[in-house]
Image (cartoon, rainbow, N blue to C red; front, side, top):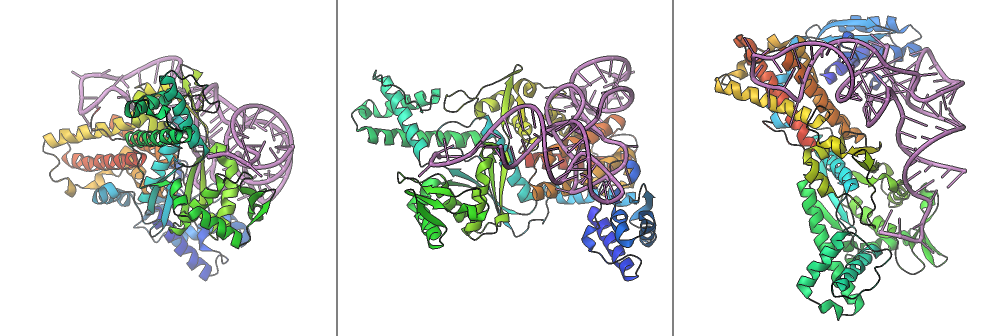
Length: 553
RNA sequence: GCGCCUGUAGCUCAGUUGGAUAGAGCAACGGACUUCUAAUCCGUAGGUCAGAGGUUCGAAUCCUCUCAGGCGUACCA
């Protein structure tokens, strides 16, 4: 609908430029928006004000010329007003609005999808937590955002891949092995001081216990490095399996798990380092190998290989992103915790140095989540083992509430997750408000089915819906496809959460003021079509957030 | 010190990328169930958009400075 008005406006502008009424300009500036108040029509354009200084004529006069030229489209536009400093307000012919419902019905689950990103391969990489411990609440936000963003991009027509990068190489994995071995020895009375940097969570003791069930006390006799290896391998495998199970119960799905160690076994790290050296992008200094990231906007050069000969985290990460580029992704979206924001310039530099367009890389930074229980902040730290796991959150408040809470804020705004609030099954909880709207509709549809009213609704005369709350509902349904596109274009999934509230509100208001099933047969049929469309859109939008749409509550 | 994010109603947050009288939810107050689910609806009240300058027809939005909170500033990951 919006596009229709926009193209009409552009066409009119072109004609007026041709006639010399207004000076030449790019047609792109002719955009149409939904006004803040219903009194300003269905759509509005500020084009006359934008053109005013260029045309050296008052905006209202230009608006008048545009209005006169557009009034011939009476089949689409009911009325055109000029308001305020020079806004052009369009009132759409109600019979056109009503047609949206045919569209919703015909498209069903695909209503809201588009070809916006057609033909473009994008990758979203998220969570990517080290397999050194269970996922905690901070990972939960990244998981919900990443998974939802992937769903939104797919709905907008992109060819999307969701990927998890497993950091299964490096020092923290040895610390994990050492931590488990230490607890294992404890079980057999060997009291060796626990490593200062070790992981202290109870899950480490569980892993040690399970290891003892498999190996008995055999690991005590092994050489320490071999025993650490055994512990490490076992622990990371078990933990990764648990992470996958947690993600599954959170309705988060990945197309691909990418192992860091594969970069080594396929010699990709080596190849990348060679590549950088051959292009003179790296150099030796002070016994270390440096990458000239400062030539690409970073504030200083970065170390690839340390003095002790081992590689930094950065080195394989460059190889990893080179691999992403080689896989043909037009957009590479990394979802990171905001505490990693200092890492963005060097990754961008790396992308550019690798010869890719630096704008193809987006680091989406997710701000911190702090947990509040009974009004008090819950302290968390992975190393000390004091953290609330994602699994605990899901068990406590449910998957749907947890996902919605993570998705209802802009990513760059810090999130206070109030556990007591999340558990309340009341007005304070927006998730139930939205799901309740869906359940209510299902209930009405079931009633209608019992009365045999659903048989010939496709022939319903929808023109009876052209007023009041019925029309408001239709207009809200009509904005859904645009909302999905804007979320995909701006990488802002929270807008779907707000859209759902808006649609649920419009429905509840409609419900309280009107009856769907009434003595008026024509109106009943039309309204059954209407609420089924609302049900469909609620269900589609909830699916983007990975939240269930219950048929009864 | 430098860099990034945030600051909007008592609380939690939106604000379509510069547009019209700044909006929701919760909390407060007052109403609505003989009716398809009251986990709902309607009404009232609530604001120096942290502060000060600037840019222009027009600023919560863009620029500069100040203040406050968070994060970062590794040859850690």
